[in-house]
Length: 165
Image (cartoon, rainbow, N blue to C red; front, side, top):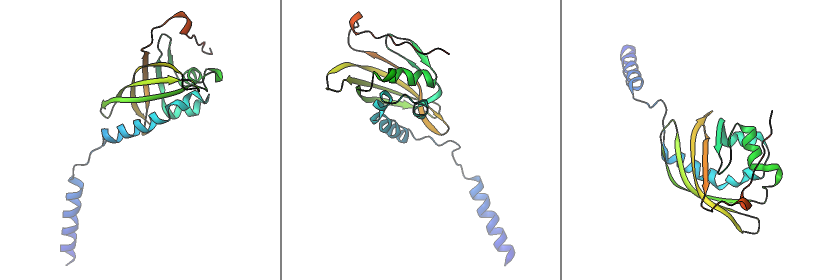
């Protein structure tokens, strides 16, 4: 009786051990849902000059490629850029992902944005691309670039000076 039990045990153990299990299961639909939820709170980055907040949204090696401005890499610079010494706290941004595609290494998001002031006056609208990657098992923005649909003129150009170390 015991030998039958052991034989059955080893047979079941062998079947379970040989079962194909994905090492890194990737589900694009889950990632899309996560990105869409993150997009609903995108504008909060204008309200907070806090590296820990930015670190939750961007990878440690993240870079943003600003429209008509510098390439900014690193959490302190990105946090500083969006907060802009408190000058951006009245900005509201709506973003809408139009396409999200990719795989377990990187996911690319293409979309549109509209930027308004606190009185709902449109300040800008345009397009963006965000490249997401996992860091510590969380999807975060690795690269982000955007450009405006509004023609540039000297009167609506902004220069932001970044802190130097």
